[in-house]
Image (tube, rainbow, N blue to C red; front, side, top):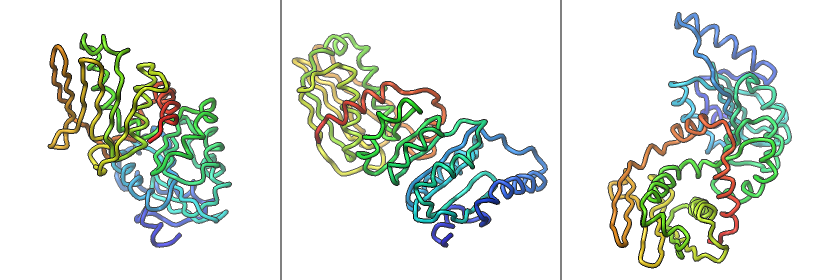
Length: 311
């Protein structure tokens, strides 16, 4: 394992694949003696697949998450090796340069079969998703360009629950807009909205949000949807959303302080609501996904519609 890849687990021990479990057991025993306290119970296996550059922040996120609830983290970057060495710490394993055709074998050998397994897909050969679906209780997509992975989702749904971290990042946006439909003037217009405009730094997120609205409001395929690219912001993948019907306008947007969302309704009766944008760091997002155990039908329907929407 190169020095660059060793940076994923800088305090780890380099071992052959066949010695991973024995080394983990020894590290747990040694840690228990050193701390004079019971070992922290593990609650899930989290498998992260991606490039080294994208594995590093995921490793940091899982380390933060581990302070609250233990997970076995398996970090795998793809390459051409059939038997690469691994680097391990007490509850983490990093494997660099594994050939994609051996990915599912490695996961099957290292996951804790008695606990839920979540695969966090941060990029790689999408052909490997098919084998991983049989090993994962949940598959969470999180790629820079999700187009190819999204195409695979329909064939995976009969074997595992699938989501996308973009969907998780949009939770506050979806919840705030859904709450606006508690207002009589908004609820009464749900069949009359004729135009949707979204300004976003991430177009895939914009399409997913538009797909959710199209499926929720049962819009016809020819409904007017306009997506506009704006400079990307780390605070939120979307900057603003505008829904228009005759005599009624609904607008959501990130406030200038970058910590809150604002929703405004203009019509016969005006209304204004402000909510916190929420914690959008990787640790909080993947922690939220670990709390989900079932299929997310709203996401599945939103994704199906999102792929029909042109940017």
